[in-house]
Amino acid sequence: MTKTFNIGEYAIGGRIKVTLSKSVLQIHALDWATRSVVRQQTFQVDRDQGMTDATWFLEDLSTSYYADQIITFVKSKMNS
Image (cartoon, rainbow, N blue to C red):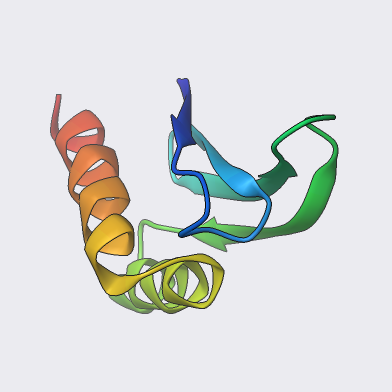
């Protein structure tokens, strides 16, 4: 499952793309115009620490509001 969040000026690059597959979450900060990767990181989300680290990384990329929105979306997809 992959989803791109078009956040704009509140995120590094403007876009954040998340890819979830089983227990691995990949987060990419993408440049708004070129969609090239600015920053990226991979997390093991089957552990509590992995989800916490992913939240911290998202807060580094954007605001706590958008980090919470993205993590809430990821958790909803993990449970379905």
